[in-house]
Image (cartoon, one colour):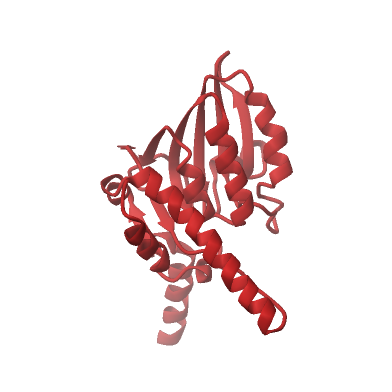
Length: 228
């Protein structure tokens, strides 16, 4: 995820936590969940736990999200820590809340999405190496993880488990209006000036064209070369 505003002053994208007032904190989740990418961007479990301590006195926390997701277990930890916090959690989907970032967003007591924002849900996936028994074990684990994630979506949206499971299996991308209509967000605000694009588009089956700027530019260049 390329996020321009979080690069000011040379600061890496990832996690930033500050107290904006005596009782109001802000958390920016801008980048991969659970690992560092080639630029050193990303959010680890230890980093989140350490930064969360800054918000002990907050009664309201604004959680701003712009992430294509990442590690499922780090995402679950972040979700749980937010839900358990005594503060009111207001989630702002500034650009993209995909994969692990989508269920982190579900921790909000209130969820606000930008006009051009997206929410994406899909079933858990992984890479496994080993014999047949190991592959079966991994398949069972992925089904269990997907089931628990599905429960989070059901609780937040009020939709049936069958419907949420189908959305996940289909890798469903919701626009801001669709996210609100289906219970993944409560309200919408005008577009924020957040420049976001998916860094690894091949990870996703149904990535909306608007989130493929780099791929579109590359294809246009190839087409131009072919004409010559």
